[in-house]
Every structure is written in C-alpha cells, then in structure tokens.
Image (cartoon, rainbow, N blue to C red; front, side, top):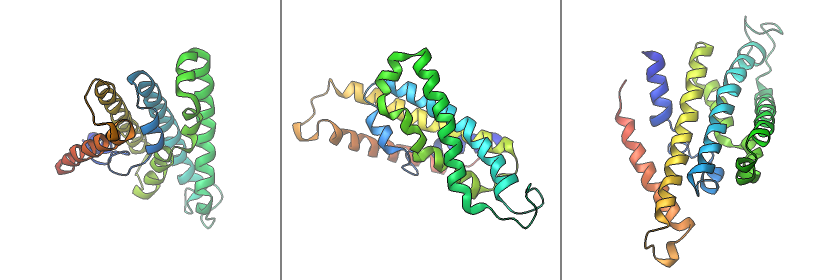
Length: 201
C-alpha cells in the first residue's frame, strides 16, 4: 500500500511538470505532435527508471557518511552529488541515444537535439535530488518513485501533444497562435492537476 501511495503521488500530486515545472523546455518544444512526444516521454521514463536507483545506491553507499559508506563512517562526499548524478544521467542518455538512432532513425530525426538534451533535462536531475531529499528507506521506494515520476512526465507531454494537434483545427485569434495558446493550455492543465493534491492515500 505504501508503494502504491508513493506511485500515485509521484504521478499526479508531485508531477514533475505541473507541480515543479521541471523539464519545461523539451516539454514545450517536442509536444507539437503525439508521435514525437510519445518517443521522448518513453525515453524520459527509461532514463529516470535506470538512473534514479543507481543514484540512490551511490548516495547511500558512496556519498552519505555513515555505517553504509564504503569509504568509512566519517567520509562525507555529499558535495559531489551533482557531479556524480549528472555523470550517471549523461552515460545512460548516451546509451538511449545510440539505441534510438539504431532502431528508430525517424524518431531520432524528429526528436533532434532534444534527445541528447535529456542529459540536462532538469526533471531527470530533479528526480535524483528529490530522492536524496525524501530519504527513501530502500531501493524499492526509489524505483517506484522514478517510475511514477517518469509516467507523470509522459502523461503530461502526450496529453499536451494531443491537445496541440487538435488546436490546429481551432479558430484561435492570431496573437495567441503558437506558443501563446500553448502557455494557456499548460496553465489550465496545471490547474486541473492541482485537484489531485486533495488525494489522501
């Protein structure tokens, strides 16, 4: 039940986009059609699902002083958190980029520069930093949180892409066309997601 609560909360209540506004640059740029949004969303889920548990283990056994630290109980390497977390994320993103280029060249071409930019997507780093802040009891909680956070980001970008595809057929005033109506849509989606904050699990 605790895992289910954490999973649902990370998707809807602590949504990376609508609660913390993390990963907005790629969220707005790649959400023009559902196909590319789906590809990037799945890539973000995968990267979060792999990097966050690795960073959890690194935080517990390398960075944080105490009995579990492999360098001894008095060695505090927490100042290296950002560097090591980003190094892990960059390595996994490189693997994802090579796999997408190999098996789906069309998706690779449509994602363009935003695929390698997952490495600096603040939603990915934010997941690891929130994991560190929340002090999860075990790697299971960290993995559930990473999956929920990735799914929340995926739902957000695919939903926006579907809405933007429909908006191409709408009669939108000229000054609001393009990014203007997109900002309004994202704001309304954010308000809608705020209703989930009343959930008590």
